Image 1 (tube, rainbow, N blue to C red):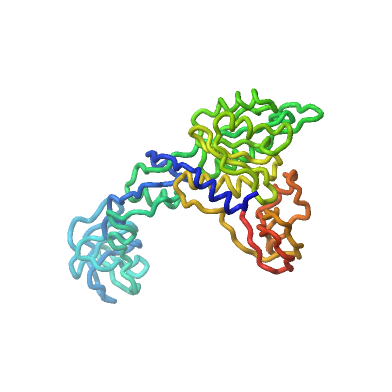
Image 2: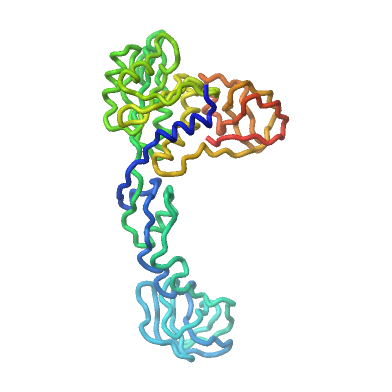
Length: 387
């Protein structure tokens, strides 16, 4: 067995970054931008009013100004404001030449085409040209785009962005005991849940997963399903990677040309993990227990997907929080314990069996225990991976 850190290092060595592609801005949210965009204009492109009021020069309390025109958003005033003049102006409208301040409408008294300045804000109430960003300004890459980024790119007049192609992932569940959700299982069968949990996890993190038919416990069935992989960047098998008489994945994959990088990781849950390359695809063999498969999804699969997208090759982010109760010592393997982070801290669930999806569903954290970790007292800080 190898440590989790070594397994991740070997996995990153197998990664091939996907090529870039250009997509419309409207389809770019959540994608990883890999080419820095360049703003095509200043924002705002002109000095603009921050308030509704009157644009004037050399403001003087008590002074009377003549209203000589109006400036509204999309309809600028073309003239120049003199020392005794003002222009009615609205929020976002261009500030006319000669004006140095915008007096808000609550601070003036208007009679006909004249105003009297009764009060004056400390500021000018003018947004300078380029006050948000300038033409030629860029964003750092690679970057996973958010709605806030999309709004900024639109303001920069960027209609398309260059992003990393989403990795294609083929998901293969294995085992005679499995049936698909909605089917009628036999007395000794269970529902294939792992592929659907992993499919949702992968979709949420920028991949394009595809669930292939269940591979039965025979070499011919496994070969048939492997033949459906097509152009996947990553092949994930679930189950059949252990050492039992019916665990045939490694044997069949190696007969098909898989170059195995490692097998077995010193962790719980998730020890029977393997990886390598199969043709043009990277391959990962996950354990069949449902919680083990999902934990490996967070610990190994998602970091691999991020690396494929050109993001930093790094382990899952770990935070720390206090324990809500005492915790016993850990065994010889790194342990990822299902827990719930609440107002009182991290509560580690008593039942940690790797078959208990109901416990995983209640968890919002994986507490990370190093090998041979000593007992921890209530209130002690401990590392966890957010779920």
